[in-house]
Image (cartoon, rainbow, N blue to C red; front, side):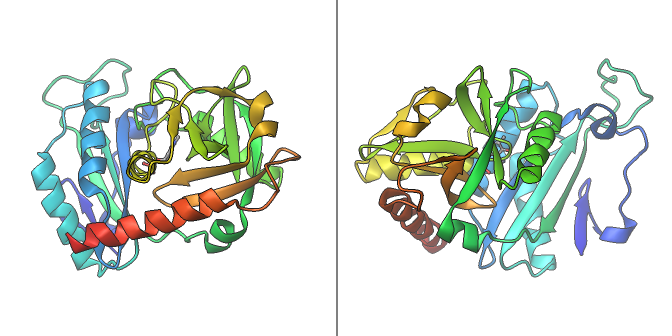
Length: 282
Ligand code: PMP
């Protein structure tokens, strides 16, 4: 595999991270995962815009322009012959003797990018999955796609150990999102999801779902809702770049709606596929 490190293409085995990289010591950095379909990036501009925003919010100066990054990522995908999968991009505040405070301006941000081939959860997309509720213990800037993911990691592991596919995070009963996904319920033909504020990551897939709903006149409400209201939901689903749209049939031991993927979730899956094809044709 060819990877990109600070603008240099290398074999995977040749890449190394400094012992003092702030990404390792403090999770002091930001990242993105961008999907690739049939050799083309999907929503690359949106992901790079979010990378820029995340960096700005933690006062990290990106070591290259978004245009330069875009160009490099295309070359990376090409060099690896990447057809379907994704590209991981990470930027840290650089390497210097361990100290919580920012390094001085002579220390430059370190960045890397490499292709990934995550398994597409086809069966889960078809049959739906179960979620495990978990208190959301993360910090109050979940809108930043930072490398600090311990709250997400702990919740995901707990979900897996309980036979579930994903965690459903909540703050005192108010649902926020999954450990690595956004969460939605459907009631009476309308889609509900947590507002894009500091308590969730505004998923690029979420933005696309919102756009699709607007185009299709499907009501899309950005409202916080309670775990206790889940029993009234007709359908539920989760989304992310890696999993696209996966129906939710169980939360803890409670069946959602009829317990099988619902018709509106199916329709959104179909429309999302069309969206991918549409972007390829422009
Ligand atoms: N929330 C969290 C906490 C995530 O880690 C992710 C995955 N990046 C998402 C939501 C979904 O975001 P996206 O659709 O941009 O992949």
